[in-house]
Amino acid sequence: MDYLELHIKPTPRDPWTEIIIADLADNGFESFVEDESGVLAYARVADVSVDQPFRNTILEAPVDFTFKYEQNIIQHQNWNAIWEADFQPVFVDEYCTILAPFHDQNIGQGLKVIIQPQMSFGTGHHQTTWMMTKMLFELKEIPSKVLDMGAGTGVLAIIAEKLGASEVLAVDIEDWSVENIVFNAGLNECKKIDARLGDIDCVTESGFGLILANINKNVLKSHMAHYAQKLNSAGILLLSGFFETDANELLDLASTYGLKENKRITKDEWCCLSLIKE
Image (cartoon, rainbow, N blue to C red):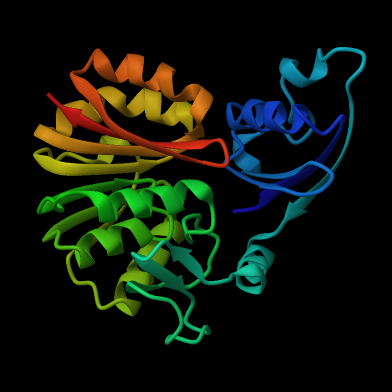
């Protein structure tokens, strides 16, 4: 799958960088990297309009705001090379160190997780994956049955098994992500992860004690009823992939399905929520 890379350079940079990220996150973009001039945004070409990637929020901005942007199509084979070249160890407090196979396996502390950098998102570098990992370690216990939606590289599914889950279903809509999940599970000697291609409708099971969903806000909203239905009573739902400013919108929707906020953490304006099914 090819990816669209946008390099947007707003003037002034603040607060427009944050506004641009929020706008693009609602328009199919799923990964962002801020730099000195603005932000790099990434989306699957199939999910966005290459000719018109921006929405009205940007196009109808005040006259005192301007921006320039460059765009580039990243071919499938090149994306893997980009991940590998930029992949640095990830340290999640004292809990966990996420490494690539080519890193020194003796560095870091806590649980060591090996992830082969691929096109799949979820290497631990993004704030949302980092927070989801931290939340997993701070649960009182890991339920035996776990669902990881939008599993990407499988890093959260792997951590869930390492922390005690006996049955982990890892789901992603991309076939190369599913392949990556299987490969990374093998690297970490995990044998309880079922990698499945599809969306929420491919999850026919219920009775999960824990559901992990690190996806964008709109997908989380569309899945919320399904998450509530598939969770056990007193089950935990961990959500990320959205900004702190969107948390209340998600919480209001979640409350209609009997899901109540249990805990939240933030990192660089991104948010992670822990909800419990009443």
